[in-house]
Amino acid sequence: MLFITVSLVCSCKTAKETKSTVNVNENPVEKKLQQTWILENLNGKVITDKDFSSFPKIVLAQTSFSGSTGCNAIKGNLLSKGDGKIQFLNFTSETKKCNEKKEAEFAQLLKTTSGYSIKDNKLFLSNQFGLTMSFKKG
Image (cartoon, rainbow, N blue to C red; front, side):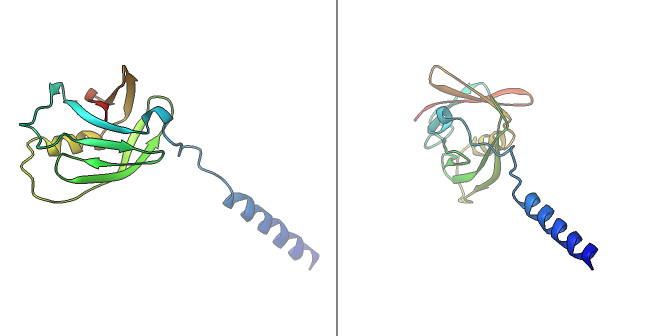
């Protein structure tokens, strides 16, 4: 009987310790990223009003993002994996029909983003193939 009691006490203590473990990979993004960014360049091409009726933007918070593709609202979660690494996760978008020529390209590049840098008040996003977009502060 004593063995059963000791076993139960030890197993309960282990279960409590396991539940309190924190996932260290879910870090908030850097403070300098947490603001509004307006798209200037998409895949090496300067954005014009012919591409979008209003310029796409992203608003970055600690662990989430929102914004616009120029027509549809977007939102989701941000995951920081250390200095210069970022991912846009759980990407959702409105489904209004739009005449934006580059909307799908912009959304797809956000979904595949894996890195960033900031220089001269500009945000540069990249994926496994290299630089994909640049933004100015909004």
